[in-house]
Amino acid sequence: MIFNKKIRILSLLGLLISASPTAFSQQSDIKLQIKPQACIVDKLGESCQLVLHADWQSSMAVDLCLMQQQQQLFCWKQRKQAKFDFNVSLRETTLFSLVDGQQQILASTKLKVSAANNKKYRRRLRPDWSVF
Image 1 (spheres, rainbow, N blue to C red):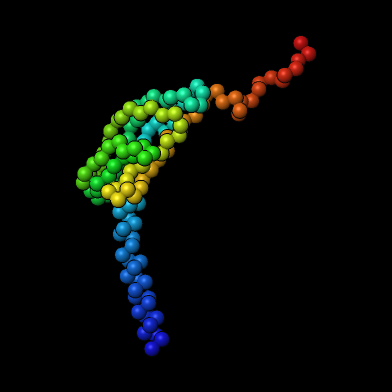
Image 2 (spheres, one colour):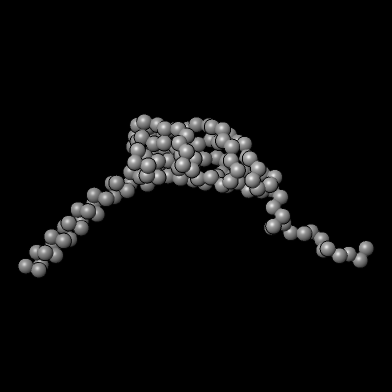
């Protein structure tokens, strides 16, 4: 009797495990690439204007939307891949993501905004005092 319960539990676990990889594989096989991956400004807080090249691909046709933080930029219906360019203005590091119809994030990447003259981390090349 106990042996039958163990077999039932193992078979149920096997069904759950075998069903879940298809759901996970649909989400995990989507690749998103955005170039460039960084933007350099003179001072933090300044606006960074650039043209981004985005490329995504999936093994199966899906409905996706590209999001910049919480703002929707583009959407596609039943596509396996897309390549496109778009203009963007950023002041801080920003997350770009691909979401499905249920707003689940399937792929994401960050575009980092950095300052060229960051005084906090800049090392002085010569000492404050000098004999000459």
